[in-house]
Image (cartoon, one colour):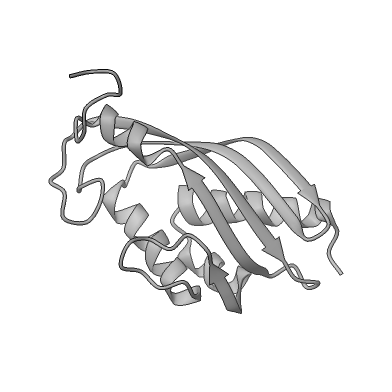
Length: 145
């Protein structure tokens, strides 16, 4: 049985190795076979394969992506992470959008659930996508006309 502190360390390592370094193999080992993604990307699936595809897409769309973890809170089998993603829109912020070449920042809250063996079984996240799109000029800034 993993402890909350061990689960927090796994969540940090997942962010570092998979999203910052592009080690998709670590996700394949860390996500359980019955993994459920509660916030899949548009057009994606809510399973392990969909999550891995999302990681690959994020890395290809924003090759200079860097996620800085600010806070980690762990309790029982849950880990909450507050982070900031920074990068440059070099390959299109989302599928179907032309790249802007502009830098952007996305504030995020992610919640991971772990099983007794330290496998990530579930994830959901809340991301400031509208703020990032406004930074990139893909939508008007709030209050601007």
